[in-house]
Amino acid sequence: MKALVVTGKGERPRVADVVLPPVGPGEVRVRIRAAGVCHSDLSMINGTLAPTYPLVLGHEAAGVVTEVGPEGAGRRIDVGDHVVLNWAPPCRECWHCTHGEPWLCAEGGRPSAPRGHLASGEATHVTLGLGALAEEVVVPSHAVIPVPADLPADVAALLGCAVLTATGAVNRTATVHPGQSVVVIGLGGVGLATLIAARAAGAGQVIGVDLSEAKRDLALAAGATDFVVSDDTMVKAVRALTGGRGADHAIECVGRSTTIGAAWRATRRGGQVTVVGMGARDDLVSLSALDIFHSARTLRSSVYGSSDPDRDLPDLAAAVTNGSLDLAPLITDRIPLEAAPDAFDRMSRGEGARSVILFD
Ligand SMILES: [Zn+2]
Ligand SMILES: [Zn+2]
Image 1 (spheres, rainbow, N blue to C red):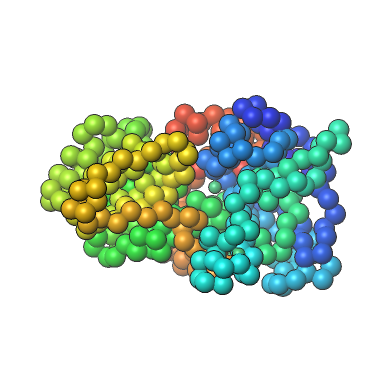
Image 2: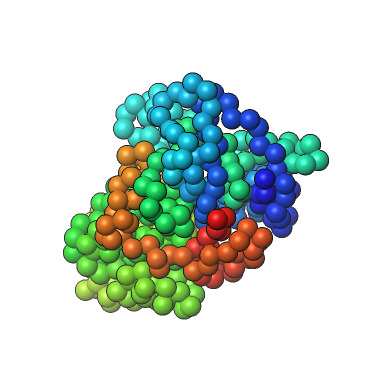
């Protein structure tokens, strides 16, 4: 089968033939119908997440089950089921899983896992246990979540990463209430999905912030009431839009100390800062002890949207189907697998929203 493979740190990804292993006990084979190009895949290519190469990219996808292995433990999955892939399937046995925090599962967090081989015989690894920028995956049955067959595949794919992350950050980590003001910093796929989720949660004012003025129209289409270019005057501009106080919530989707600091200052006294972006180990955020006390703000991180995908993803699918969650503004390109390397180039330049690879 064809898959998007990166052979070494910083190499340009290319389409290659990959041979997957047979479907083992408790595993399923899924024919991928659509897969998103996510920023975490870029972090796999440039080595930030330190995966093992050669690596099959992709972790945000939807498809159809074509084979079910023997004696599958856990959830029953049947051939023909439409599914969304879950890149962080919880073990349901560790301390966090048994204490209501499956997104912090002790078994999660490995950037890549060995699976399959190239035509040359060289062993391949797959991104986050999936490797979903590929015609097929072989994965544990608890890494797939059934969704209605009539859910469009391109939208279904995005539920598994960008949308679950964004809606969880808004509704579960930050707990945005109707009428509150929300500023979202960094308008890539997750940031734009966060704007959509904030509006869906009933937020009054939703302010999108990005370095690029070109994101203004995308932000407004995703439901932002205001757009502010990220520069030295950004915090002032957000305060001016929020009665001089700052926003009730800031949701940071970049993962840099400068934008986390800006999110902190753009939030009102007693407000909440939610960090969705994954940053670097040596990028230190500086807050004064007096400011922490006086501002009375809360700073939290949102890992996989503080969500339980098995519980929350079917709800998202239902919200898309009944029209209460419109994800159309997120998808700016629908392209074949061969065009995926160009989509990574566009993403690294900060252009567009999500590119979705269609396999049908
Ligand atoms: Zn992702
Ligand atoms: Zn666990």
